[in-house]
Image 1: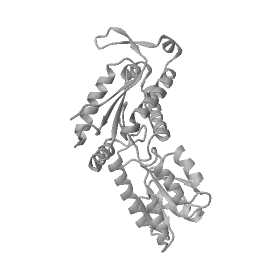
Image 2: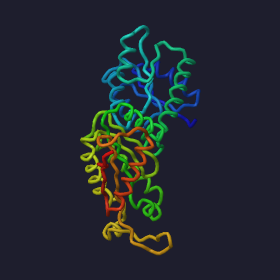
Image 3: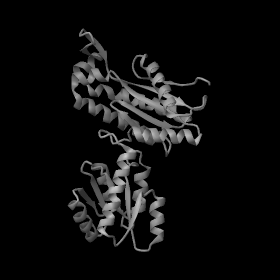
Image 4: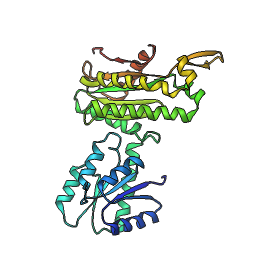
Length: 310
């Protein structure tokens, strides 16, 4: 396992020292915050692999911070280990209700703490398989989310998003610039869902320039239209002035012949269970791939929504 970064959020400097010494000795990278507000700032600046969070703190207590983490689409995957006072049953219940993944009672045995941390990190890595570039949930989490939506039998919409002409851009501008586009695409999707989506919408990163968004059918069109508009507004900034003014780049095709390649755009296929019964994840993925390929036949950014009846 790669070196995990653990954030300690506790207003007691003695507790922070004990935790820091214990965790550093095991090879973990440790960062510290003395209250919930500072902790939230560090979470956004240096995303940790795990958060050890004290229940009682000034400014923003552990329960409030945990709720903020779990309600944030980009942060919800972060595991939280809550520290509670000895015998404080209400603290334990409050931490669990706020979304904490586990809790440990103070004073704690260092070996028990380390065992719990290792267990949580193993579980998190296995269940999440987060994309290292965007830190969005990867394929395992995506499959689990889709299966849960299917099992719930409630209306849902799965949006498959893919960039057009991305390979040509990567070939000309390099992988570092390509990675910046992928991260900006993730930011646009996340921001749009935060502003226009539902509380429990899901965003995943399949890999490369492929993303998935799970929402409800009645708002899926609006969300996708906003994502497309925001992406098209941002896309010209990825190019140098010459290519931006021209509206294309010159790159060789598969036969080595130079060709004009349009600026990068985004295609979306939307799969819903409102007109047909969806029973397994592979079925959803197959329909999504078909719809996305239809969208890619259009010039520029576009989306196609499945309205076929069973």
